[in-house]
Image (cartoon, rainbow, N blue to C red; front, top):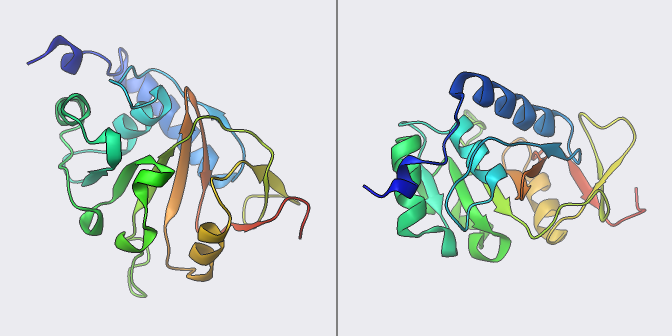
Length: 192
C-alpha cells in the first residue's frame, strides 16, 4: 500500500471529524454561507474541503461515485483506506464527487421517492473558487437572501422544482465549502 494512501486522514479523528461535521451541517442549514473546513490532506484532485467532507460523511455503507478525473487510483485507494466506502455507479450512489462538468447529467442520480425523499444523492462539486456573489438564494435558513457563485442557474432551479425530491449540493474549493440543499430557491443576481 502506498504511503500517500495511508496519510492525509484526520490526525485527531474525534475532534476534527466533529469540527468538519459541524461545518458541513452549518453550510446545509445556512445556504450560501461559506465555511472553512480543514484537517484532511487527500490526494489530488480532491480538495482538502472535499476530503474532510468525505471523511466525515462516508463510511462502509455510503456508496460514492467518482466522476471524471476524481476517478483515479490514488483517490480510490485513499477513500477505501480512510472510509471503507464502496464505489458505485451514479444511479446507486449516496454521494458523488467531481467537477460540475464531470458530474453531468444530473438526471442519472437518485432523487429519492415520495415515501423516502431522503434516499437521494448529495453531489460534492469541486469548484475553482467560491464567492458570496452570483445567484441570489432564498428559502429555509436564509433570513432575507444570500448569494453564491454557482456553476449555472437552470439546473438548480429545475432541481428545486422537484422538492421535496431532488439532489443536495456541497460546493468545495481548497479548504472552503458551501451548500445548496434542494429546498433553496436560486434566482439571477438581484432578482427575487
